[in-house]
Length: 247
Ligand SMILES: NC(=O)c1ccc[n+]([C@@H]2O[C@H](COP(=O)([O-])OP(=O)(O)OC[C@H]3O[C@@H](n4cnc5c(N)ncnc54)[C@H](OP(=O)(O)O)[C@@H]3O)[C@@H](O)[C@H]2O)c1
Image (tube, rainbow, N blue to C red; front, side, top):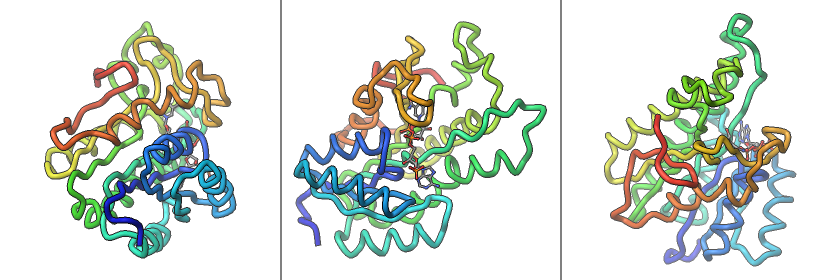
């Protein structure tokens, strides 16, 4: 069992990019990190790096597209704790940039399986552990391109980038997050965009072939902040590292 006084967090897709950096930063707070990774080898390697830095890490094999994997993950987490303070639904897929005219339901489905059904699968499974915590928080890692405000702003590059799957999946995730926040006031549900929407900046990771202008530390600022909210903090809001953003 982990120390019941210690704050615990499960981060999906924690083996690299923003997930790994968020794990490192929350580990530095002395939290117990349940590091989700769909690939066990990549997860072990990431966990080893954090452990070397002094963090308390449990690697959790977790593919968010698999019900069985989610069931196994909850079993493993329960071996270590009887409550979960924070869940960060970070795992995400960008899909291929296929123009709407060429997009198929299969293509969209595979992205939704990770970005929409994944957070629902994981959130649903971990609700009992979250409810056992004093001040449970769920952070949904969304995207600025999932907002109508950005996608319909001619000053942003997004209107000219014609992917269907990824943007619409994040828009769906936003609505799902708001619905959870409204229905479950005992848990804080907030969504974050890992960038600076006003400055059209995002964080350099594998997902964008490291074209982002922000560091992963800057990209994780809006993940770490709602993960660390006090009991009187907000629920159902959408932020980037500069503050609240429009939908
Ligand atoms: N970088 C940005 O500025 C930015 C902007 C907007 C939104 N985001 C969002 O931020 C989140 C993290 O992205 P990132 O930029 O850090 O990209 P990344 O470095 O490519 O990381 C993506 C993570 O998601 C994991 N993942 C993908 N499918 C999964 C599945 N089915 N089950 C479990 N894990 C899975 C990946 O695991 P593998 O290593 O096994 O592939 C990886 O750990 C995503 O939700 C993304 O949409 C990022």
